[in-house]
Amino acid sequence: MTEYETIIGLEVHVELKTKSKIFCPSSTEFGGDPNTHVCPVCLGLPGVLPVLNKKVLEYAIRAALALNCEIAEYSKFDRKNYYYPDLPKNYQISQYDLPLARNGYLNIEVNGQTKRIGITRIHMEEDAGKLIHQGTIATSPYSLVDYNRTGVPLIEIVSEPDMRSPEEARAYLEKLKTIIQYTGVSDCKMEEGSLRCDANVSVRPKGSREFGTKTEIKNMNSFKALQRALAYEVERQIAVLEEGGRIIQETRTWDESKGVTLPMRSKEEAHDYRYFPEPDLVPLIIDRRWVEEIRATLPELPDERRNRYIKRYDLPAYDATVLTATKEMADYFEECVALYPNAKAVSNWMMGDLSRLLNAHNMDITRCKVSPRQLTDMLKLMDRGTISGKIAKTVFEEMFATGKDPEQIVQEKGLVQITDEGAIAAVVEEVLAGNAKVVEDYLKGKDRAFGFLVGQVMKATRGKANPELVNRLLREKIHSQS
Ligand SMILES: [Zn+2]
Image (cartoon, rainbow, N blue to C red; front, side, top):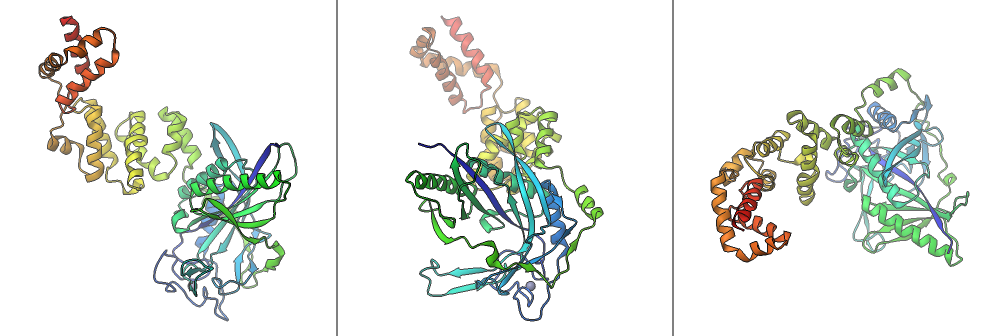
């Protein structure tokens, strides 16, 4: 069988979170009763004129700079002409041959390797409305249209076909989301559609220089869906080629429930849209000083922050990557470290119990009840020996659920660690007396028997005995008896 190489490029639409729409003062707020965030401009009524929202341009430049793009000195808007009921003007204002930004890149990490993925272009455009069907589009007796989203500002970020696997595509999209979130120009909520991704995918025999025929996949609403859809599509294309067939250039949709891609429509040629310059808007001549002003306000971006964590806090690369994956997570980490300098201990708790509980409750860190001060207070209780590491886990779960201070939980639940040697020694005596057979096994070399005895002492003290003391006293007593 021929070996194949996979070629993937992504087109990502990001909604910019300006207060008003791109060409009119209507609200961009998500949700709202249908057709309440509209005005004559975004409804495309006759005689109205669009006016560019300066904030949209600023946000688009901000995102483009964060993605290492060159900002065009001269760019313009164009009309992309097509009819669809969610597009009241019958054309979308977009940018065609002279986009706002070009030649950017971002870096991804795959299998411990850094790889640069090129960004061909970034342009601005307006979003379309939403059609609401009863059930599916094919069986619905009628469709409703909601124009609230019409005219919401978007940037489209087009990558180079630089990705060679579904894993790389996922890593690219995750990194793109992280960078855009850091810039603050979008909340990038895939579930609300403020980050949407289409993929172009093709395969070719390994070593070949020419691209194979590509298909475009739409409707992938999560990172997992993107990866699954691409994996399916790559296999499908290889199977077609192996059977001597050929790939049809077409748009396909990802069916999440069936786990397959299905044909939607054969690809329209670009010239079908009859692009032409938008006559109602002047071209954009962008002042270099303004671009530099925007650049100066960019925050420290994920790669820089990650590298700083490795150098300054001596964290493993993996920890640094996880902690900087969202700006909020990284801010939380730094607040903790300012209060408690053991960065690795903070990292362990954040990547361990904190992340586990956040995932289990489907929450992000902005909604976490445990403040950085509370987390670090708990670490200090451990350092002082007030609670053991094991008890800390219980305390932390309670903190996460209630938002109470760790000291209060320790008091209320009587969780103070027993460090009184006499008290522990008494329990140790009892456990040894009740488990003569186990002691014998241990003395014959069964190491696991010792663990059992430790467990019995911890159980008798409800986990509160200082573990080092338990270990030491058990060893001493056993050897003094034998
Ligand atoms: Zn409007």
